[in-house]
Length: 362
Image (cartoon, rainbow, N blue to C red; front, side, top):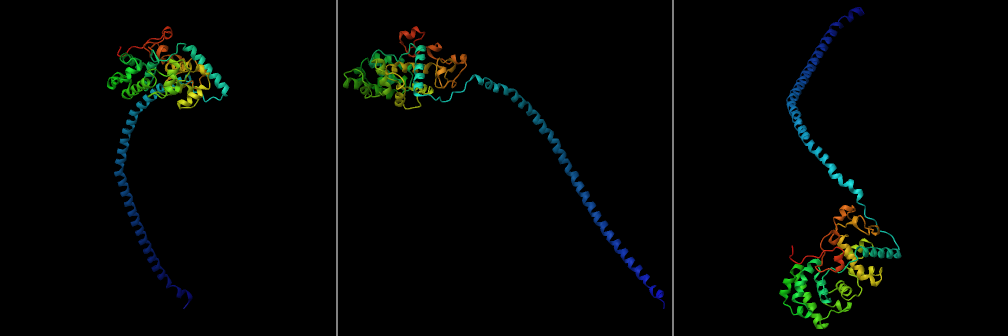
């Protein structure tokens, strides 16, 4: 047999192999088609879900205008606030007129003495009628009135003491008084029970230890019930003509503003300020400073724009600097109002001062 005859039987085998391969390919194609159909079905389901979710998104979009409408309605309120803002900002425009408080000044002791004495000279020209603002006719009345002036105004004391001294004109009379009756008279001054105890005790001490006379020495005065250094210096300076510095709340506030001292203890303030002035000036210095503190250099709203010593004051600008507004803050005769004394000195009346009304008047 030839080689060609031997190779002919191979063809049928190849055909069978080709058929099997074709069948396998068809089967694979069918499987792929099935997978594709499943994928298509999944895609359709996802599309359906997306369509169902679409209304919710649409609803959200529909709700959005409501928010927009609400914000649009709120917008005018913001606009109103913006329009109102300039009214709030107005004080800022006026701020330049309100000078900033000056910083602590650095000066030698000699320079401080010169400035302090110049301030006192200026105040003496502004208040030539300065005086103690408690009504009194003798040392006894003055010491009693000064004790009663604690925690109240001089005006209230002056309105109360006429009734007290009419009924108890001497230390002996007040020492023997019925405490309940004295309390009723002193009730308008506040703390009337404690004050009654003090003035009766003080009167007894005067009657028993000093023959019914008020002593003219500091060491004796401070031994009396209710009498401290401040009260003693008021009595010494104004009833006996003996120099003393009265450190009340006005005096302490002003000398610290003027940087004469930074002490807060009254005794230390007294010593520091006393070293700046001759002893002969102490009593009138106290009157000048206290008058200025009550009339112009107030604790809360100092009238800086109406202050005669503004160029000498390191604290200028703590209060109102506009002259017109500052003048409206002035008190007592500077503002055209009654003073604190029912019976002020003639010099005060000549300067335009108005007597205070009695208790219960108008």
